[in-house]
Length: 336
Image (cartoon, rainbow, N blue to C red):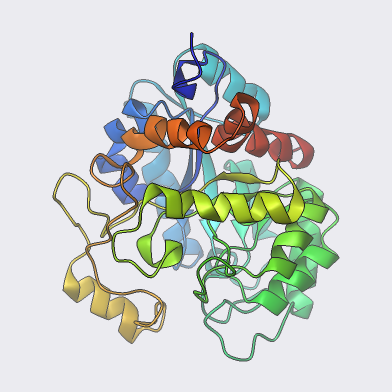
């Protein structure tokens, strides 16, 4: 055993906290090759309750019929998956559209295994505004009620894609740690989807974790950023709030350039722009070339990321923290 490749650490847990279901399903082997222990699966984002219900059904069916997968709703289940050489799946909503305007739905989803909810997705939402809304009106009255229910049930609250004022109000009102599952540092690269230092500090003060996003337009101005530019976001967060608050949320999705196949068509891309789910200024068209080592082969490059972190001065324990232990800490604090 050496420290040249942290994935030889037999106890390492590797967690990717932002995985789009359809893309993940068709590229699952890449996560397996990268030694991934946990994939946090976006069950639903833009669909209402009916669409979310069907999405749960598809996820359950895929997990049931795919050897080596298990649904996890606890840290103990994740540790057990690691010990068994299996991959754990955690259910996540990106946005609150599936909640519609009914807080009682939250417990129904929790009983189906939902353990992380992102409070907005770019646009104005039920609980608060997304990061592409110019007014950023903050946490709504209904949002306060839903946040209390999320806290009561032990569902982890996520402020990726959320307006900065809204994020700060959510963190202040939450009685549990808050995360940003897949967001980078605005101070390193000024995208509206990245989060500023005051939000980073608030997340860390709550006990939360920030997952580093590999989408190139959130990493750097370069269309094909380097691995060091990706790690620069980690370094910034660590220098601001200390180690222990960084994880991975690499956000491989349709449009990712893996296996020479970008699965997001220009027609689909233009539809997202037209609906104002995305803005062209924030989301340039595909293909999306992830940082070197995390691009071709996608998450199979996680060992190279860990190696480069060690080369840049991270200790083995700090690398293990970023790979997964920091996420496990906050999961254990919140999930009930």
